[in-house]
Length: 164
Image (cartoon, rainbow, N blue to C red; front, side):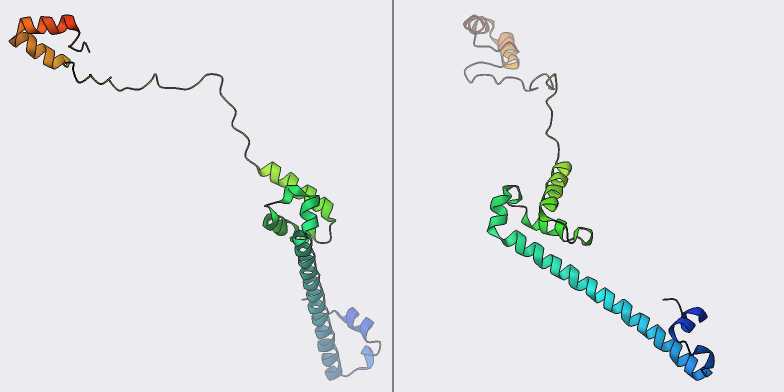
């Protein structure tokens, strides 16, 4: 807060020139206090206006008819309250606020993922197929060939030995 100038004091008190120094000091303090109370009064008035607006927003969003008229707000009541309760939006028409809120919500929504032209992949699984229980593995077949060649040949012809 700025102290009042000599011209401000002369404008407020026409008898400024004839006042004593004590009267001038008291007049200056009185003017400063008057300015302070004016600032406090304006701040309180603004606060009451904000509270009244928030109550109006709450009443609007709690009214079932509002949700019937604007089904897009269903499930987004708290977000709309926060959006509409900002001081810069105070006193705006609710139709305008709803449009702005829904536009803002679609602007902040994540875009749908587009498909790619070519599928990505890794060439399939890297697992080797399991050998059936009645077949011998390659290592078992190799061991059988070295120990019993005729039996190995019979199992090989019957398809009982895995080939990799």
